[in-house]
Image 1 (spheres, rainbow, N blue to C red):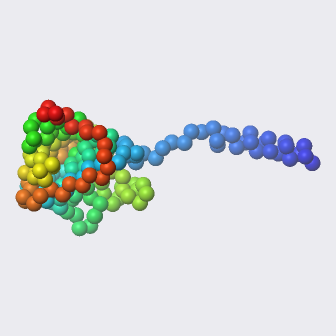
Image 2 (cartoon, helix red, strand yellow):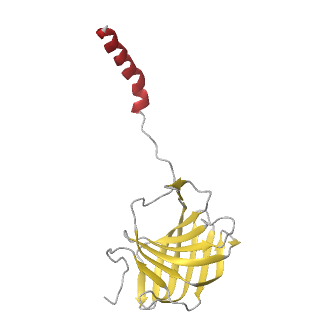
Image 3 (tube, rainbow, N blue to C red):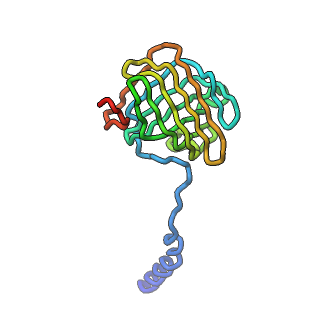
Length: 190
């Protein structure tokens, strides 16, 4: 009886081993930095004079600057879409530079497209990532809580263009430092 159990167990292990031998494939949700945290968030009040996504003109609610603790920066544009409160387009890049105290340039290497129809992680939609080239320019200074405007222009790998011209209404920028991290801006004045 004991020998039968041992043989049966060995057969089950042999029969099931192909199931365990296959490697699991990750679900492609385009989440480039799952362990990154936002350490600085700046919300700007104003309006979009220009906001185009792949040839479509869209209305926007607001623009936010988000700095991640790994150095990645997003200029996130909340789309004024009554049917989708998760509709956000972000211009994303690294290695931003300040030419002076009132100007900042961010090279763009991807555009993130988010909507309520995207796959979710922990209940939140994960954006589709479009490899892109371009630049965002900000006139103004977060430390002084004054931003005049933000312009972004990017083209993705399939030739679609993304454009933003956001103009401040003069309301002071709301800046929140969420946690301390190393600076990632190349500042010639330090």
